[in-house]
Image (cartoon, rainbow, N blue to C red):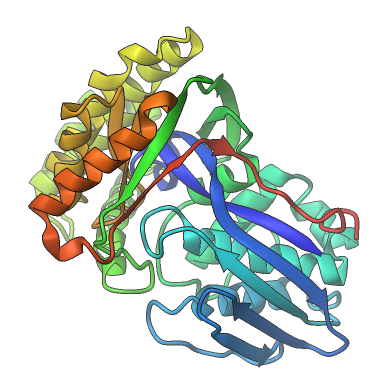
Length: 401
């Protein structure tokens, strides 16, 4: 049984998903290529063909791995699925995988691992045929939301939560990977997850992705910085009502929310909290709708300044940028990218540039040269590649048993 679980690019929507906001995303043509074999016991074995490393554990146990180890995502998925579908989990699996994604680069390799592990175990056990699966996960949209909850530890409908991997995020990555389509950008909203629109990606353009070499492990050091940005939103909604920040803004408006935040008592400064809300408001209510209109009209050549604005706000108000990603984005625009932005959780990771396909290889080489001249310490760990929107390839048994 074979599968391909792609990475993803967050075209727009920086830290908007857990706020109940909007994003524009796509899957890409790089990711995890896996072979899965069912077992006659309850062992789960996963082997990285890239490193030769193997992990193996019984589904009845709760193994632990060091912070940042890829085994955390496999183990947490197994723990959650065993708890949520105990009557169906009669056999384990052997998963052998290869990935051509840069590690901890903001391309959602961690979420891809979770999806890969879930699909493998669900397929070999026929979980999609169970009444509890059908009641709670009737379609791919709900599966994407559920897998976001596997990662953050929250419950989903009747499916009880577990510890998660320690990040308090949303389901943007899982939605992009599971719902992305070849040659399309998808506009999605969260809380609940819906697909609002699909935009044709220009046939004569490609993404060049630069992985900065500044790693951003979701289970490592970047986790606390990521959670800090998320926790601000949690405190706002807990203090002022509303299940999501978007719901709160829709209900009372920004003019009413700003003074409430200024007078509030939080774990963070009032200035930080106002910046967090302003960032979300501009990204969600101004930039994304404006870019969506241009994409609908096929005016890709005009989106650059709006995406520059998103990048600048991420650095100034969201605070999730590092010197390397700021430099990469500016350099990409300087050497001719139609648009460029850092993406993902931030605090390291990657930057995309939208360029004509005919110029992509030259652009890639020039961008790399400029970056390595400025940040020679990242020559070994940084990488660049050319990609386009793609989509997941799932085994037929996943949703048919």
